[in-house]
Amino acid sequence: MTYFAERAYYIEARLAEIRHDLHRHPELSFQEHRTAGVVAGILEDAGIEVRRDVVGTGVVGVLRGKREGPCVALRADMDALPIQEKTGAEYASENPGVMHACGHDVHTTCALGAAMLLAERRHEMTGTAVFIFQPAEEINKGAKAMIAEGVLENPKVGTIFGLHTAPAIRAGQVGIKSGPLMAAVDTIKITITGEGGHGAVPERTRDAIVAAGAVIQNLQTVVSRKISPFDQAVVSLGTIHGGKANNVIADQVVLTGTVRTYNPMTRDRMPVLLGTVIKHTCSALDTSGEIDYLFDLPALVNDPVCAEIGRKAALKVLGPESIVDPAPSGGGEDFAVYLQHVPGAFFFLGVSPTDEPSREWHHPEFDVDEKCLPVGAALLSQTAWDYLKSV
Image (cartoon, rainbow, N blue to C red):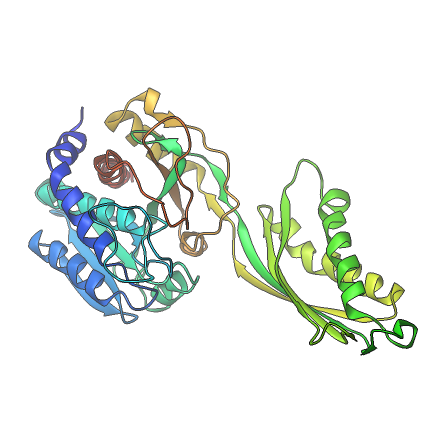
């Protein structure tokens, strides 16, 4: 067992204490004031330079080694979700309607643990470690804001690592994968316009609801007939709004949803592919259709070299039996935005108490087996240490 693994398990109780405190006091995106204060205080207690109030509620810690050298960043997100917790845990949320249902309290705890462990060895360290505690991941705005504020520039970050809870992986294991790990997530708004009228005389109308039904059906043929079976895409519609009375044929329907892809070329094709289906389907039904397509989050693609550094670090702190090759997730994660600027890798941290998946992200009963905490802290600290030694 390496130094970082031994020390991570030594401070396991402290990590649980930190996580319980954060879990009891969840805060929504760009409202993470208390969380940021806790994070900054722990970093300062470890002798790490701290920048507070970055984009309002972000925190950046800088740990400088004995000798100048490369710079590595570890990133954790801090925000919670507008969900009423139903775990029944003794450390359950004390903020009504707000809950850490995606594990950001775990991410923050693991990154703080890594910061404390690396700070213990600063006099042996070559280079610099930057700890980025980011707000507002859940609304896909935190990473962009932190990067615009210069968190990758001073000091200049050479690579970045992070992790995310994985309910499908047993606690004590980690998922490490080169290449695409999480999907690009884009948002769509489809407006279908016809001509309304009385329900008794449909022949004198152009029914937007009928057209919307056909559009909903036909959009799925884009994936099944325009995307290679060796590629992946998902088109999901989440809302439909149309009509004002049960005896009035609607003149307009608005649909909203998401498009998820992994291949950048496929992603670039989707607006035209969807728009063509919408246009011709609506035209056949004497209505018109338009799509507003917003490119939101890019796919999270792990750099092969950085992923291998993480895999070797995991071998040191956990052993080969604790490393799994995870399936890519269709979820989005704005860590991907950092990877548009610097190479890096993102890991899945197993949190299930058994070999069966536990409650998924964003569920009111989501919780973790806290055996994951020292695992995450050890993995992040060992990975950062190994990167600094390898450059």
